[in-house]
Image (cartoon, rainbow, N blue to C red; front, side, top):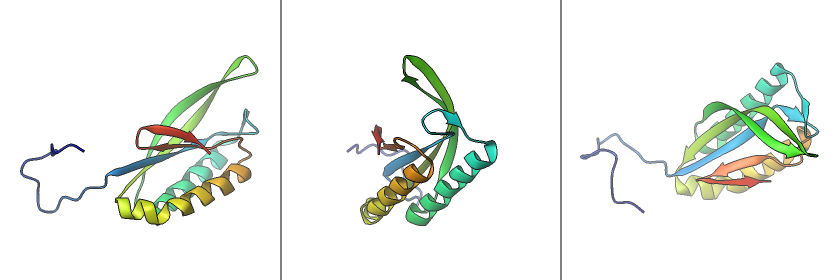
Amino acid sequence: MSTLKPFDPMPKETFHLPVEMAVIVPSTKNIKDPIGEDEFEKRTNEVRRKLIQLFGGNTTVKGVGGYRLEGKEIREDVNMVYSYSKRADWVKNRQKLLEYLQKKKKEWSQEKVGVIWETDLYYI
């Protein structure tokens, strides 16, 4: 853990949220079938609301994901919904997040749902 601080001196109103996570929201179902923009936005908004409920906030970054399927490259739009939290909030709510993502995996017809935790990618 670094002792280096981003500002010196730290402003009194500053607080630190050391745990970083992101849910990768897919724009497909059944591995490669695209969903509509309305459905994609609905998925993203649901994840945003859940992360606000569990950890207090979120930031969404649009991206493009890619993977190989049956020898072909598949590309899809994704939204990465980031959230940051205190360690105690992460420990308290991580199981709720896992259960939510397992439910969404089935609802979204996904083989796996990607989660970034700190700098590591997990497929649930």
